[in-house]
Amino acid sequence: MVLEYLQRVTLTALDILNGASVWLVISFVLAGLLHNLISPDGLQRMLGNRKLSTLVKATVSGMLLPICSCGVIPLGLGLYYSGAYLGPVLAFMTATPIINPAAVLLAYGFLGPQLATIYLVTGFIVPVLIGLVGNRFAGSEILAPGFEGPVKPADLEPGEKVSLVQKLQAGLLWGFFDMGVSVSKYVCIGMLLAGLIIVLVPPALIQQYLGNPGLISVAGIALLGAIMYVCAVGHIPFIAALIASGAAPGLAITFLMTGAATNLPELISMYKLIGRRTVLIYSSTLVGASLLIGYLTNKLLLPGFTPFFDLSKTRQTVGLANNLIFAAPEPLRYLCSAAVLLLGLYALWPGLKRRLA
Image 1 (cartoon, rainbow, N blue to C red):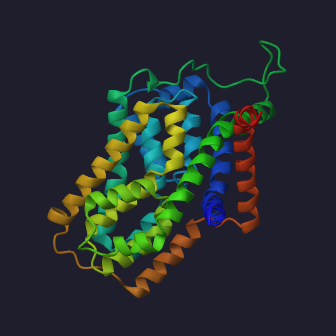
Image 2 (cartoon, rainbow, N blue to C red):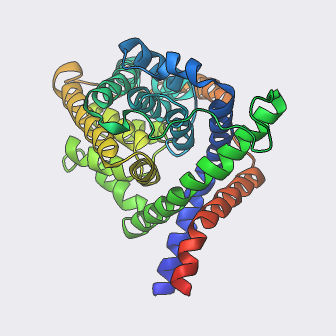
Image 3 (cartoon, one colour):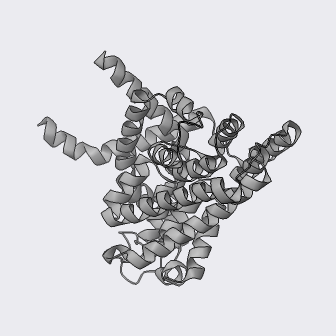
C-alpha cells in the first residue's frame, strides 16, 4: 500500500514537472543571458529603483511572456541577482503566469467580455500592487546581498576584453550551474510535495468541490488556488465550465490569480533564495487582493452575471490562442525534465551523501 502511494506520488510529480520543465530550461538560458549581457548600470537604470513607472514596465514585460509560475522562477531570480530591485522582480513574477496573450484570448472566448476584462485589468493592477508593497516593506532584501554584477569568464585576465561568445558561454554556465542548480533543488522538492497533495486530495474531488456553488467560498477558492499547480491557459476552459454550472464569477478571478501565480515550488524557491519576508509579502498581498477582487466581482461588478458561451466564437478564439502557445514535443519535455532532475540531484547529493554515510 505504501509503495503504491509512493509510486503514485512520484508519477504525479513527474507529470507536473513534464508540464513545466521546458519553460524552466528556457528560463535558465534567459536568466543567464540577462545576467551576463545586460550591464549592471543598464539594469539598475531599468529596474533598480522604486519608481511606479519601473513597476509598470516590469508588469507589462511579464504580461507578454507565456511562461508558467515554475518557469518564471529562474527568470525572476536572474533579474534579482543581476541588480533589479525586489519590487519590480515581484511584479514581473506575478504578472508572467497570470496574464499572457493566449490566456487573454481564451478568457474572452470562454468567459465573455465582461469577466475577461476584469481578469485582464486585475492581471495588471495586482502585480503593480505587489511590487509597491515589496518596495515599501522590504528590508535588506530589496537588493540581492553582495551584488557584484555579471560574472566574468574565469580564464580572462583583468582588463582583457570579453567577446560576445565568451559572455554567452559564461552566462549559460551561470544560468544552469549557479541559478539552475539552486532553483532545481527546490523545484524538485516542491514538485514532490505537489504530487503528494494531489494524490491525497484527488483532482476529481477538488473539481467536484469547486463545482458546487453552494459549498465553495471565495476564501476557499483562494486557499485551493494557492496550493494547487494551475496554468492559466489550461484552466480557463475548466473555469468556464464551472461558471456555466452555476459557480459565482468572482471565483473564476480568484482561482486564476492565486492558482496561476502561486505554487509550492515557486514559494519554496522564493523562501530559500530571497527570504521569508519576501514570501510573506508576495503571498499575503496576492491572496488578499484576490479575495477582495473576487468579492467585488460577485457583489458589485457582476451581481447578475449570465454565463457566456458562444461555440462559434469560442472555436475562433481557441484557434487564435493555439497559434500563440508553444506546445513542446514529448521527447523535448522528457529531456528537459531529466535536465532539471539532474541539476536538482547535483544540488541535493552532498546532503544525501552525508545522510547515507
